[in-house]
Length: 269
Length: 252
Ligand SMILES: Nc1ncnc2c1ncn2[C@@H]1O[C@H](COP(=O)(O)OP(=O)(O)O)[C@@H](O)[C@H]1O
Ligand SMILES: [Mg+2]
Image (cartoon, rainbow over all chains, first blue to last red; front, side):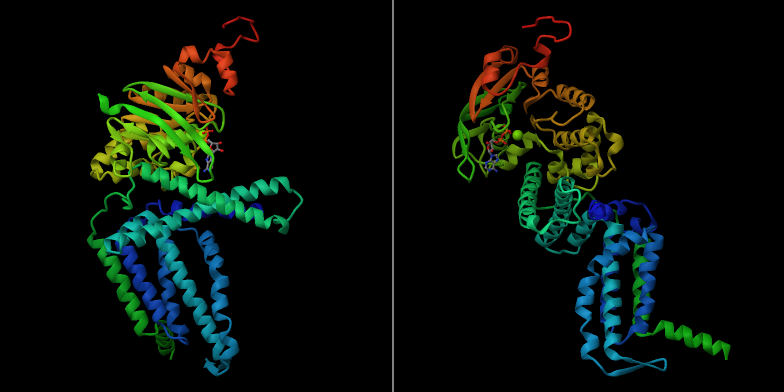
């Protein structure tokens, strides 16, 4: 159970990472948000069988990982966390879609191709979202959303939910620790304790969330979340954005891996 | 300056589950006073502070800050002049960095970012944790968290400082630091605690609460030595005033 708790305590890892000062971190939040949104749009726009074209889009997360000096493993773990949902959504495809699809001379069922496409697409979108948070931070992201004129109430909802997740996780960690200390020989939580544990947890997190909200109100919180001033958008920020959008557009229109492949084979001939 | 006066008239409060936590309290705290509110666990200290801050509203009676009643309408104004430090600093610190947390209040009052920075650095300097400004609050030690929580209230420059058990769960050095810090704050102070030695050192006046009622209200040095009263309220005479077990000197 120590494992669960460790990963829970690392909940705020993304916040920690977002405080670094790399090239990517220093970009204007709004630019990063817009870049991510265009990336997501392009990824999602790919058809069900277009795996080849999707591959070139891996470049974006790889670049952000490298330039943003982000640790791959912990972020990867977080992606795995949502993988059951993704697999759950995609797994039925191979059963329903039995048509044969030719991939480089090998016959495979189209269902598996769509499944793979869903897997890649979801992986890329989740990664992009996590990378955005890890390089920007939720507070600044909220500021950027507000700059895009997203209604205050939605942004606030998002922020408080995000806060509430860490509050909940901390309470979970505490409760589990208290439990495991008094049930040392047990693996996991015995089912007789599930009910009361879950009940306690909900009550306690509600309580804490309430107190945190009160503390916010006492310091003049009226619903608007101020995160301090923003720098201006520089030429460099803009060129970062335009550069990526250009790349995404090219990647959408041409199958880059295939182009490179035929180029190389062409040269060899 | 009358606007720093804090007055409570015949205050009653019951929790939604029917538990009567405050039963008819009245007192008046004047500008510049430092008042200790003591009482056993569950006596109603925290509830009283919540009522003062307008987090809870009394079922009967009223709270006045200066000449203004605490109501939903006057809350924004009231809260600019009252600053409250919570019992558990974890409840108060929720931003990603200490700096942002301390800046939270001033930013809500729409000060420009320069002034915010000035106030934040000032407050952090005052509590002696300037070097922690970029750290994450949840990773600090108990004493550092408390200092950060105090800074987050000081940055709002309140006229009245209200603190719920500021020295609870602190080691002796951190406790001493917090006490020095509070002593340096020259405005009106209201402090609840069962750290009676601290109250003895810091507060001129003490209000004793027992089961939601005021059991005594007067000069600290007279109240805290009243063994009978202390005992009846689930408290005891401060250690500093007790007879010394080692050298046998009788103090009281
Ligand atoms: N949310 C609540 N609901 C019901 N009763 C409460 C609640 N909070 C506190 N109480 C009760 O009110 C009384 C006073 O509590 P509190 O003001 O927290 O005491 P103190 O801070 O002096 O230890 C206690 O008896 C407590 O059980
Ligand atoms: Mg209390």
